[in-house]
Length: 445
Image 1 (cartoon, rainbow, N blue to C red):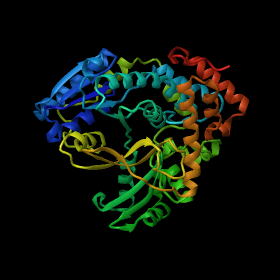
Image 2: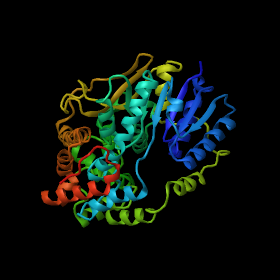
Image 3: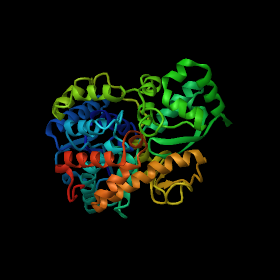
Image 4: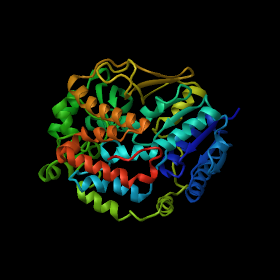
């Protein structure tokens, strides 16, 4: 029987078109039912037009459906992919603007820290609704989540069900591995690695080229070639001082730690170049230009860049299609890095927190692989972020604003800029800005 894959949040056009393209390249899914779901009809229509273009150009026998009601298509689904965003451009702007007014130099704000915590609080109720629908309509489905903040959402969802198999996916692991291969001139098919930690802050504990340790070659490239160092200044500094390379980009990592965004001179030295985003208040200025743009306007603008006639149909490197193929397609086993709860996987991170570790996908399902203990300097870094995420998840599930405050209080970047009283005041303002989104949550006071 043809497999059914449901894409919830299909208006995320880049993800949807790439993931559908990859899926259809596998023989088991050429005739799949691709069910697109988005609550915005304009975005839904644009995503269907894009997917129809891929199906027609590839001459696939796949069936494409589109609906604003996910319950119409979730029944008997084999796989579900989520790429949703909850909130308006104004909400996303406030996520950054309010902390910025307290001196926090936010670069992206979608993974951890106060900006991401309130993004998480807006998103979790919608994700729990999806979870409950899946428990009722497709309890055997595999749920692959791309929505940020990845670790907090996956931890909350996985702790709320014993029926649905869920893993969070991020392309930073394979993307960074490819970049490191380029740094040292190694063909990707000759490199193996072990990568583990937490989302956006996992590290390559092993990185071998033809079976030999290639970490010294990475160090040599960074120290001897200025163009390599300048490409990823923050990550390269972290590597030189911590000894292991971190997965997510410099822009993201600069705001997860204490070292780079706390003074103007450090912003200029480390964050002006090689971060991929503008630093601090410059980023705020950039965001404010589109703060009143509607989601329809943004997606129409994004779709205008999509040319189905020239869109490559060859398979890409996102994990989702490979995972589905391993489990209920051609059953070709596939290793990837997934976000799962830490039950006996990383010995020196909190039990039950969300970790990003190697996972084996096969017809048996998803099997996370034990990594052992992280190097101690990495464990210290990961423990702090994971503990803040645990507090945020507990606060969200219990409706406890005090835990949300404490999760923000211990965030490294927040602590470089704010007193305890200022964090308290900032969190109150973020609660007020998100009042309409926070279902069953008493506001902080």
